[in-house]
Image (tube, rainbow, N blue to C red; front, side, top):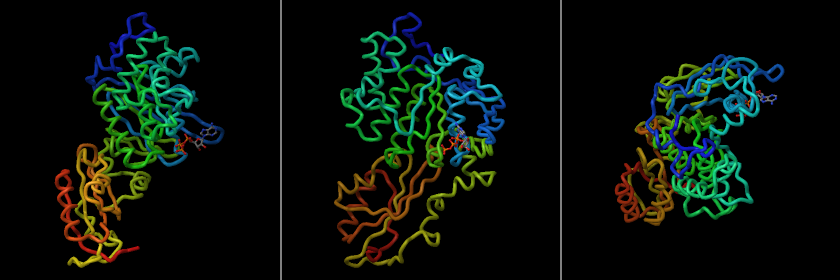
Amino acid sequence: MTAHPRAEDGQAADGALPGAADAAPRPSETMLRLVHVAKRFGAVAAIDDVSLEVRRGEILGVIGRSGAGKSTLIRCLNGLEKPDSGRVEIQGRDIVPLGEGELRRVRGRIGMIFQHFNLLSAKTVADNVALPLKIAGWPRHQRRERVAALLQLVGLEAKASAYPAQLSGGQKQRVGIARALAADPALLLSDEATSALDPETTASILALLRDINRKLGLTIVLITHEMSVIRAIADRVVVLDHGRIAEEGDTAALFARPRTEITRRLLAPGEMPATGEAAESPGILPMGLAAAWAPGLDAVFRLTLAGGLAERPVLTDLAAATGAAPIILRAQASGVREAAATTILFAARDATPELIDRIERHLAAAGATVEILGYAQRSA
Ligand SMILES: Nc1ncnc2c1ncn2[C@@H]1O[C@H](COP(=O)(O)OP(=O)(O)OP(=O)(O)O)[C@@H](O)[C@H]1O
């Protein structure tokens, strides 16, 4: 458990970051254990004999199609739903038999982030983040210090006095994350937290969650219907299907060798051949390419963004720096976490040799790998 002083313990609380005192994860420790959990709604088995374990400091991704039982599972984890049978142990304690009062205390140690952020629109960013601390009885000046530290952690110091309506989706989710961390949670549950965000913002929120996981040793369980989210962040994956675990395992192994049809189908949408195979695969390029440049043709580039670069707005920066208006033809993510790479095929309209030169220099200077695949007639 964290050694962070808590107001409710009658000790002096300070503004230190949650869990910072014992950030180093002890991977052998079990944070969460489900034992033969089942939950029915009438004839529907929403959760059907699910057993799983999450170690402290681990990021577990739970994926499944609509109706697979993901929301029911997460509601069982925070005590909002009582299983019909089985045990839900958080740090060794079964929460299933607990009454509402005790469950509220347990929930106080579980942070939640949501698809639609669930911020209070009439409260400022700082007041939204402070809310769990207020409920836990933290004195005002200690709340202020803690909120400042949390806003710094999520990169929103400058927005403390703003209202949610004045923020972008990504900024709102950052507030949601800061609020979820306020009460020093042992566990963070993420319910489709990036589903309402565009791909670039999704990448930055996932990077933030990964960063918090590393800095604070925080255990995270996230549910999603997107394999790309799992690939970006999860250490381990559970694939749910009709309330049952269809498959589980290490993220890289599951992506490399999916054992079940349901996992293969979840992997399929938007998947393209791995980096390097893209241009050779039939049907990948939407147009016939000429090998030689001629005035008025579009230049088609293959760009590979590895590591942290995949999380940066590289094409936006390219447009600002070179005046190119890159049009994405195809994009594909490959690898997982540190080995993650994004391959993008993009066209530059009416690309003069000077513009092509500027594009290549800019991308190379940014650390990306870029090559020209050929030249094409303008498609529209
Ligand atoms: N309160 C409820 N009453 C009746 N049936 C329910 C209830 N909650 C869930 N179900 C049913 O249980 C099954 C699992 O639902 P659940 O919402 O957990 O799935 P999910 O994977 O989260 O789906 P989605 O991605 O669409 O949110 C579904 O068949 C659903 O209709």
